[in-house]
Length: 79
Image 1: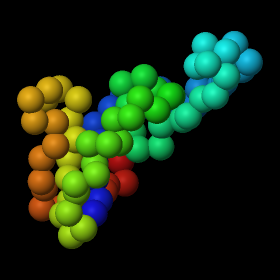
Image 2: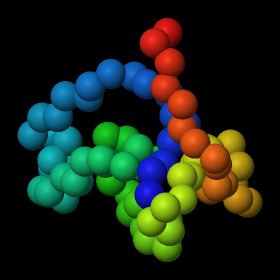
Image 3: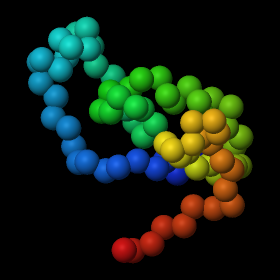
């Protein structure tokens, strides 16, 4: 499976000891792009558990009722 996630790019986020303390001493960083608490993981990746192997998906932040849509392909450009 592949997926496209729509989100705003805001560059790397440095973490320091205060960030770890705020997260209870352990911080998990989002690797899927779906978290609403970036750079931290909020468990949003659980929504991908039932993705089918040969299907491409698009996740959109602006569609709360149906954030995942099947798409034909993901096309990359050299903009």
